[in-house]
Structures are given as structure tokens and as C-alpha cells.
Picture 1 (cartoon, protein in one colour):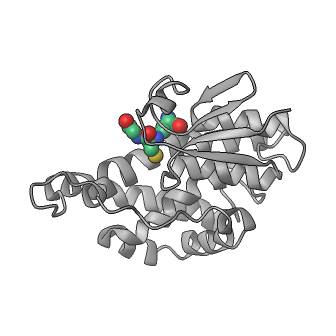
Picture 2 (cartoon, rainbow, N blue to C red):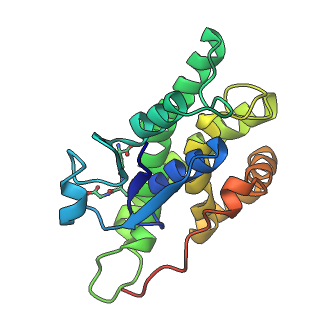
Picture 3 (cartoon, rainbow, N blue to C red):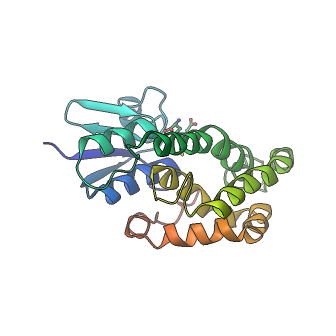
Length: 211
Ligand SMILES: N[C@@H](CCC(=O)N[C@@H](CS)C(=O)NCC(=O)O)C(=O)O
């Protein structure tokens, strides 16, 4: 069967999730580097967001759907548990990452540092300050879970851990999130465990391009 093509930019946390899933499964892929809403992305992604994926006649967008396809289609370790309770916890955490945690930590908070859009390029304090009160709750949610379990949703590594990991790599780049991470020893220990996996090592993004 044809090779999987992942379409997107290597700096995107969600593109890295799909790449890590391929590495964990032992599935080869090619990365077609493209920005959101560029022609090659809009040809494959219903929203123009990245990642998108092509595999033969199968064209998909949405990280969870792409990873679910890869997990079901190929042999190798199951990334989404088959046992119903474990599967439900995995789904719960994946949903929390994509709808809640990513929204607050990246789209509402870190974006104010990464892409401020201010005339002089200084951090967007209005955006950042509006997000700050929401940060402790997100860190507490993760710290409590990882105090109780070795991985998100249980004691087995799953796609939920992959879903969160690339986002956590960004946290040291915001001063407030860096402090909260330092104060979250279980989250930090979880991060170190995932960061040592070959799938994480193989997908480290290149330095951010100058804007
Ligand atoms: N729900 C999508 C979200 C993907 C997403 O937000 N990708 C970002 C890059 S990390 C993007 O394409 N942003 C451009 C935009 O929001 O227009 C998924 O799970 O794949």
C-alpha cells in the first residue's frame, strides 16, 4: 500500500502528534511541509488546519481521526486501548487536550508570546493577562492525574500521552507557564519519560523560522 503523507509544519504540536503516532506504530511516512490554509493543506483539510493526511485514496484531517486511522490500519502496539474502560479514559484525556488544555495553554496564552501581532512584536499583554487566571486550573488537572497515574488516564502509555506531549514542550517558553511547570513535579516527570521515547527524539522540530 502507498506511503502515508502527513501534511503540515513540523512546529505544529498536532502535526508532531501524528508523526509520533507513526513512529510508535513503526509506520513509515513522508512529511509534506505546508502552512495552514496553504493550497496543499486546503486540498486535504476541511478546515485548512494542520495536520492533514493522505494515504492512497484516504484523505483525512483532524489529529484524533488521523491517529485513530493509523492505529487501526497498521499492526504494532495499540495506541488506543481496546479494553472499554481504558479506552474511555484515553478518549476523555484526548478530548480534554484538544478542546480545553490546548485552547487555554496555546491558543489563549502562549500565542500571545509566539505570535503577538503587536506593532513592535512585544508580547500581547492583554491576551496573556486574560488567559493567566485559567492556567493554574489546567496545571492542577494534569498534576493531579499524573500524581495518581504514571500516564494520562492510567498506567499505560497511550495516544492521550502523545496528544499532550508536544504542547508541554512549549510551556518553558512562557514565563508564567514555565513557573507553573516547575511547580508540577509529576507533570515534569511524565514529560521527561515521554521526552526520552524514540518517537519524541525522532520528531524534535527544527528551530522556529524567523518571522
Ligand atoms: N482540531 C484540529 C486542530 C488543528 C490545529 O489547530 N492546528 C493548528 C496548528 S497546531 C492550525 O492549523 N492553526 C491554523 C488555524 O487555526 O487557522 C486537530 O485536532 O487537528
